[in-house]
Length: 290
Image 1: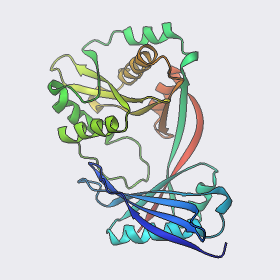
Image 2: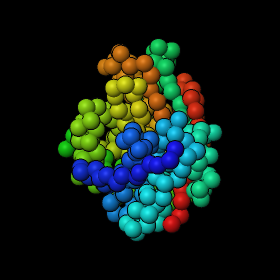
Image 3: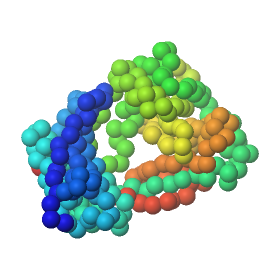
């Protein structure tokens, strides 16, 4: 290839907790060759961080396109006074090798898994959902959290703060009611449905754990977590089993449910294994320190 241009773009609609910059690599004839998106986190606790998504058409690789896109994105991250840039690649794929060769270091390994709904033992799932958990009860909602639970649900999000992130400079995600509502509204604007299962402490009515599932397509688990003082009681498995049952009942056209878990998060991987999720692939989270 004799010539290509890197064209800077901008996403005109910032999200509630981030904004995006973009670049398009274009050949002499104007044909797109690749793209890069840089997500700049804007909320308190993550203002040091940027997230990179970079793609080059298979036929255009090894000609400097990816390197030029990466340079543009890194320069922008520095100009925005970011401390770290993170990016993810499928283990062993071209992106994995590309990032490792350009100063990124591996900070987190992830296992992706899928539950084929046609293979689910419905009786076993029902038994898990109906299993008594003294002192707790399940509740569920679609879309935005009910007002009566909004405050404690937002507070329960801190259950994610000690999720194994290994060496990732991810910062601290600060949740409040406004952010919880904005996240649900963002899913709705995409034409998708957010379904949440939560565990409530019967003593005071507060949310102590949650499991989120987004449909349609293959259902995607967004997060499952339990507050530290309530762990070790099978609550995560209880909630995730309830999410599986909901998918079977309300979305019979779904083929499967997908999830991703840090390889070092043994308790959550055990939950997935117990419910029948099977690994599909592994990914690597990379980080560039600026």
